[in-house]
Image (cartoon, rainbow, N blue to C red):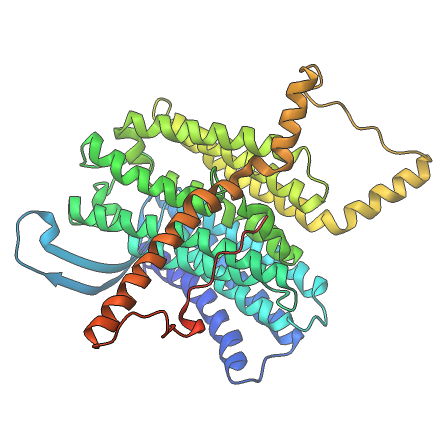
Length: 476
């Protein structure tokens, strides 16, 4: 008869197979042009999430009953390369491995509970919507990505889940693709995600170069979270940690990437609730929690994380106070709490218990924001009914800056109304110089190609218009 350890492995396998099966069941009929009915999609989603949730609770029950804090599901090395050289970087391997511990199990249970709740809400919210099937296919992609990223035990597996979450997020922002604004905003978010993904990929390369390992359990000496220790010097930990912080900032909309968060509200309310109110916006904080041993080593990394979290929280509070629509106000309220969570993670360098506080804060905040986003469409109607019953507008308490000088309040209002000018700064001082540089490379390559072909780079022989790079459209 199988022992409890084998039961835990079986349940862990089911946790991963259930969302993957849901994606196959919804995706293949869509690819062949015969999507399932709304009732079939609803049943498939409900059963897949329920089975995965019961399996995750089974793993948790085994861990609590046996005192085991580290259950690993190893699917083997998919890539293994040995090459000549010296040091740990002479061997590269890509292992698909998943880890169930005190950090991953709560997050995957939260993911399944909230995805089940929002999925049930979406079946009614999007009833008879032309894109009903498309929404749930992308929703299944997101669910698989979140489960993969939450349970990843190697940085390559984490990157795979990270990519699935980003892809589904950007496509659901552009859900209403018959209008230009959702497509433009979805593309904007996708570009920011590309920067975040590049930082995470570069961190994986640097980590392999320094240690020869991308496995979290090998990197931390198989010690349970958060008591693991990494065999890196403070400068090495700072280098890898800053790259991971850049990746987390892009995914969680920390400053200076906060401008994409209100753009993400172009998607339907169910995607806003589960992505930018609950799960996706916290994925960057989860990455920092997973790599908390790096924070233990480097005090400068901890200081940078605390500073970035503080700046993000203050920025989100100021900007959120002037928002005129409820979804944008809720998104900046979420960002303010994410900034505080990031501060708690950084302060864990001095008080490690704060990492548990940050995890509990993350779980509770995700549940609260999901409820608020789901209630947002009917909340405004409730306010109108209450004001009609009272016969007057509801009073609004004064803000904390009411005692500030009038000139300072005016400047802060303009700053908040323009959302800190972050989009304009990034476009003018990062995107445009980057595009101009590559346009120069393009012109240089064209001249060399014409010269090698024996032609003159003459203005009388213009290059076809479709080969010219289009200018970047400034989105305000």
